[in-house]
Amino acid sequence: MLSIRPDWSGPILLKPVVRLLFFCAVLSALQGVHASSTKLSDKDVQAVEKAAIDTDEEEKQRQAIAVMLAEYEIEGKKLLDRLDENAGRNEIDQQAGALLASGEKIMDWGRFRLAQCDAYLEKSLELKGMIPEITREALERDYHHDGALPKAPPECYHIKDTFVHPATVLVLTRDDPSLGEETVTGIRMEILEVLGHTEVVRQLVIY
Image (cartoon, rainbow, N blue to C red; front, side, top):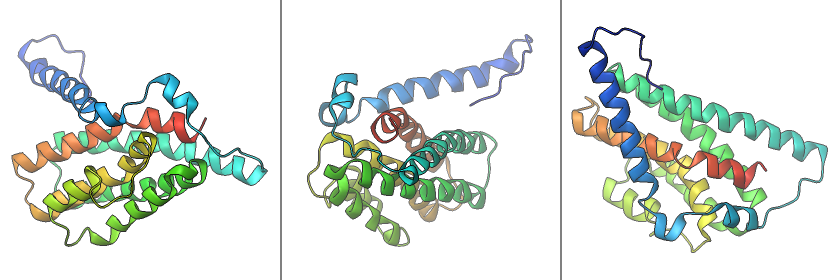
């Protein structure tokens, strides 16, 4: 998150405060982008069918994924901070790559916990090999809006996003390595949106 020093000199605080308010507004808006088809109420989340945790090994894996998801949130916020600090492509790609790797593991665990999402998440993982050449239009159509994916219940969408949004960041930096203003805004929106999904993911695959 943004760090705002307790300095009451006035204008110095204006820019970060305005930026923080903008982030909050964008995040709120993005959380409603797919609300009609993917938003889950608490009751919906509780009703999702999940695989039981029956062995010590499965319990260890659940705990490891819980830690990974918390770290994912931290790393996502660090990426936002790097954008504010005008970091270059290599640093942004490194942060996004770490999120992508964690998202892949979260997806694998989601395939175990939510059998109804298995085929959908497996197909989503094919995006990893397409990052060097997929167009932004195809990425949006096929993986954000599920054009290339099999039908699945809405809970699957939230898990998929932990992987698809970092992949999108890598596509954005690929197409604009100089990180122009429009690209930086796009990266920010991708990370804000996925951070809006992580608590639902936690409820779905950890608890």
